[in-house]
Image (tube, rainbow over all chains, first blue to last red; front, side):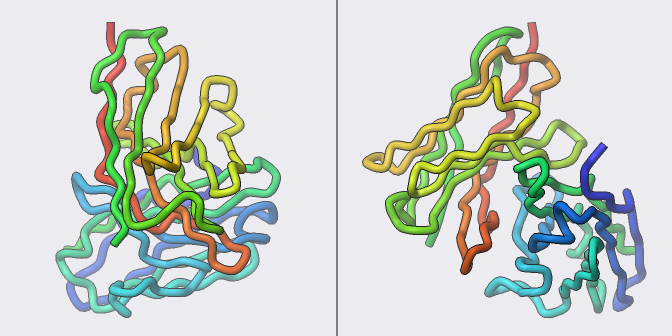
Length: 110
Length: 122
């Protein structure tokens, strides 16, 4: 059972927009920045979003992040087949004194 | 360009101690704000954070695994070493080391090594 809650799977057709939610609490998302990672099959995670809504250099602007109180979201617009991957949210938890991850969401492009 | 590479045994028996080395380049753990951490991922499961060590020797451990983990750094070799005692088949996972960046007061993992699969089996 992960501290941050994500839907196990989402899907969308090419060129559509999908969102992935990440629900936490006042000790993690409510107080600290959220980061999002993309993990392509067989590969290491890759940073997609940091500090809730900032894009690292080189990441497509089709990806965007947002946060409201104790929940965060990752949006992917203009879906492409290469977006098929697992997506994880992460944040520092002040109560646990630990980095916590969501359980991951598998994105399928139909 | 920052790179990280994990190395260590691929197969262990239950109760043995795991020692993994993260060798990195492109940054120094003597530079303010820098850190290296470890996460793991059991086959088909989610990511789990284990430990982090920073430039000032600040160390953070996963509360659930703290009694079994030790992390050290060798700045002259650009290496971070993770030790996990009393290994169990449930510890079978791909272990990743990652670079931790500090942006203002915020710390986050921004790059990972390719990972190394560690199997625990009798």
